[in-house]
Length: 183
Image (cartoon, rainbow, N blue to C red; front, side):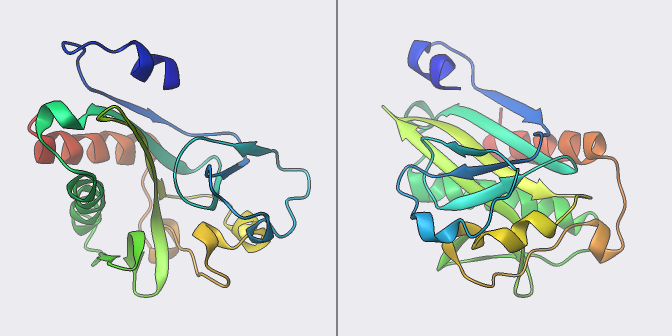
């Protein structure tokens, strides 16, 4: 992502990379160590995204959004809102009412977080993106203060009675992002 973003030109097409990570805790560039409670054997990686600590693993769809927001005339707040809205729209197709919170980026089902945002903007170009819990082991979240919030509840599609392969959810998320961004 860093190399792609650094080597972009004005004409480089925007991209969305969809994947699942092996188990890993990621720390934002300004994260505070007290939010990493007991990582155990799960690797901890320092990243250059914003935000605090998060967990990624199999069963979670990660959409890395490599977008020239300056070229598109999108500000950071609008970009955050677009990412959140894409997830809200996707979850609505599963008859799940979700919402963002103005005080904590991401998407929530009631008080529980289902999607996490971590972004970096360099020279008007955004990278990193959004992670959506589909059907994963949520236990590692108990070993951190997710996004820097002690006791933050997390959930996933599977806990809400919705089962779908990650590949299907990833494709649907990409379509919602493309629709909102007019890509």
